[in-house]
Image (cartoon, rainbow, N blue to C red):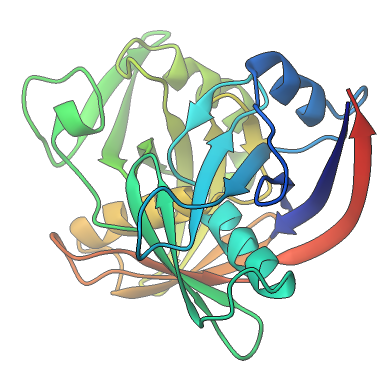
Length: 276
């Protein structure tokens, strides 16, 4: 079987987009692993599956798969790529696209400059909603790793995030502390671990170690989680420029009960077909 695909990225966070509007494809975990493999497949941080919506009033059904074959519910960079793809292919001509995800509905706004603004939904803080193992909601949590107490914030952006404030992201052991946090037993469904360096109230630097993927050049939901954590602690303003390895995102949030908004680019790389 040959599968047509489109390779895209959002600030270096790269995706294989599979379009099922005109073809019927089932993404089994083994197939996802093949597509995502950078040596034996196409290579990507996530595989995005899009197709006809299940409900009236929505434009696309959007599913996200990590390289390990597991399905997740949220991806800000992927959502922007989906908006660009649908407009480029003429599948949706509206300026506002409503996408169905496992977490709920996403609103995607295609801007005149080619950037895409996404309503990422309302963040959740209760431990059961993240989910994480904690008796009650706290402003900050602690976990002991190798005898060292690590302080972090926790929030769900449709997927679980732990946010650690660090002095310098370049000097932080992201490659080891990321998986150590994931294996701590605090997060039963895994966690995306964000390492945030606060430059000033309107600017942060961020690295994210994602569950099922590892460190990526950019993480949209991770950028949202970091700004939410920083604004909740009164360290950040309502609108923040987030600098990631792959580029910059603009994130805004007006406080608890309000949705988080993210704005950034979406880039086409190439199209192809893979025989599987």
